[in-house]
Length: 199
Image (cartoon, rainbow, N blue to C red; front, side, top):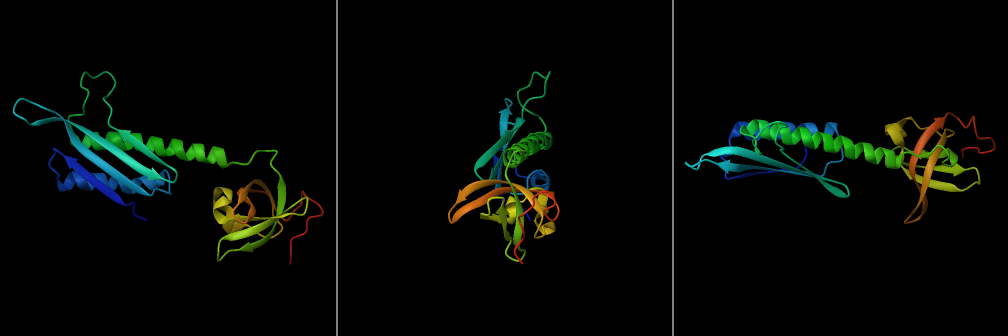
């Protein structure tokens, strides 16, 4: 899927090769986080000489992801006296390297927040609707809890089967309790006795 992109050149000539580099780097961003909503890139003149020629470039990359905006800019290299990058292509590369780091960090934080704790409640999968992407699990106490395929960690929804034992985190959904995360920990309820999947 292509990320929706806006490119702005401010006081800089918009060349086809510079625009192509920006598009190539934007196309690589979903490797680091797949749920990117949009991307905005601004390439601008950061400094000019006495003849009004551009002598330095600054690039700002803004990425919209669910719930927040991530921003990365070119930063001067350590040990250099200049506060700007003199090559526009290098400025683009530097800004995107910084954005890739931000996306990796953001994705890691989300995974850590979503990961069920070791003492999270256990349940057994009772129903799976693969076409519509949801299912139900039954707790040891006999409660049925809805879950969406996006709640299943490590992209494991397609591998779920009724009877699989899971660890889950529960939240209050619009229509009652639902699992915000589901992690498979065993096949066919070997660890939990007395919970039988619905036929």
